[in-house]
Image: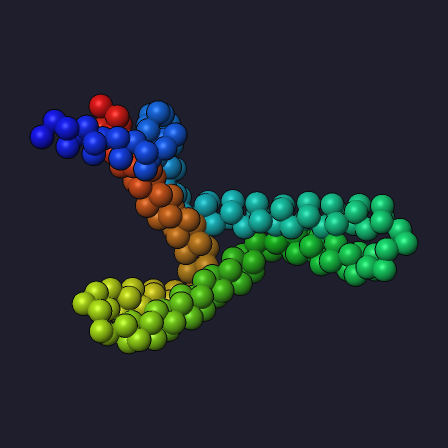
Length: 191
């Protein structure tokens, strides 16, 4: 029995790779994400505004870098196209900064549409795999995606100030718990 346990530990260590040597990093990263996600659940409007502002900042910075590149690439056939891209990125950044509420409405509408589309595709996938015993799992996933998309759309645009932030907070919580338990598993595997 001891040999079997030793072999299992070796296999777990090989699967975990470098993570097996530093499980504490995963645990602490997981805990940090759990804390941030918990804060986000209670401050979802702040998370929404912060995330859209960050996206606007990235778009603005990308536009400036695109313009600098275009000016340095004189003689290239695509300079004018690169400048158009730069203007679009800068305009998006400015629009997001000037009107973050409108940007959040667009993002929220996009999320609802994305949930409907992915839910529909999962629904098709579920019915394509009815020969498998677990075919109902994609069906449940499809139903939840379509339901969530419908809930978001039914409250749109009023829910646009908090939906993106709440989804970010939930993602942080899910990823945080995943990393935490992976770190615990890695810690137990090397004992």
